[in-house]
Image 1 (tube, one colour):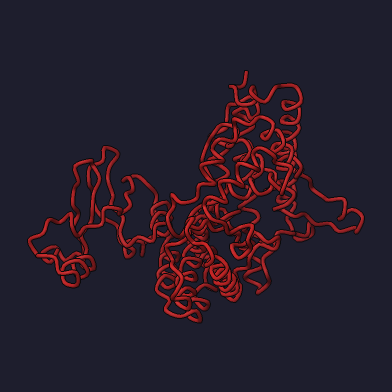
Image 2 (image 1 turned 45 degrees about the horizontal axis):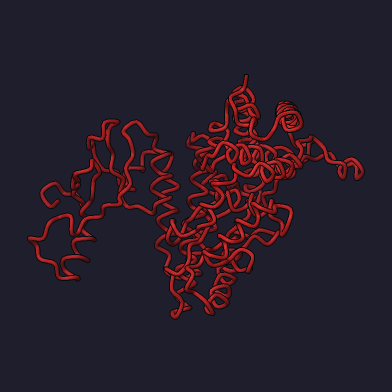
Length: 444
């Protein structure tokens, strides 16, 4: 490492993976912990360092680095041969540089005040990334990863005020759009927590800490879900056993206790703090396709949000606006979520879910790919108008006045709604005339 002037050395492992020895690891595990200098490198290396293939884009590499909170990425070719190591400094000639800089500042914040100040810059990163030419979908994924980092750092700083509570006692799940890595500037933060089963009486104190976390995030401009999907509420912070029992009850009786709604929220869950293998609720939902009655009810709930260009309320009030999220994006998200459950896919992002379900009787290839294209266009359009509001110092929202939209954009939205409506009508017909077990068969 000294001879080559690097802060790391790569260690090849027998199973084809790679470990990494760094300056920091040598200091902590040799100088501090007292290991001998002649100890094998595997005793001090980090075997969990992320790996990216040689042809991957800088944006994807950045998203992986932010998502894992990694200082390094090992680069291999498709055959698994080592080609090098990427550090945050290597992004300085990439469109990803803005994301790396803000991410590092957030991750190293030492006080809540400093974190709030730095977190407020997160929305500006999206503007910077797009101005560098990054695709909107990639910029949204980077923004979602930065939100993860803000939440993780807020958890760490908040729990410093609760020294009697363990950070290892729970897993924090990001739900909703951020769980799917599809958060835009108007997105709230939905969350849930799975506790280890031995937490017992301390759970109320943990919930108080979670409420503090929610308050800190709000002070940084990141609001919690307005419908109450937050980790501070008992319905969204349960022990592992309680989540498992609740999930089984929702599958058996989805009409009871808002089962369909809770299922839709939890299947979007992504662990961002704690043991990722802890939440048993995710494993229970992998069995959903074996419950045709429940799948039918979930389908009805998914199709209840219809794509439309104007709501009845707008017509009565004579408002000429469109809610891009509620009236166009959400119907696609709901369709993709249900379709992924139907084919047993664990994918989280809307486009990956549609790809996984493409070709089934319920969602033929053409319809799935049309929805992917429409979703990409709508997200880009949604982000563009929110950035305009952000640059004006206004709060980004999803409701857009038609007189502020260009004729081309109005036409794009109208065509998108027609495409989504066509898919929803077909799914209605398939559900009415085919038994549930035939929904996932290949389309004929």
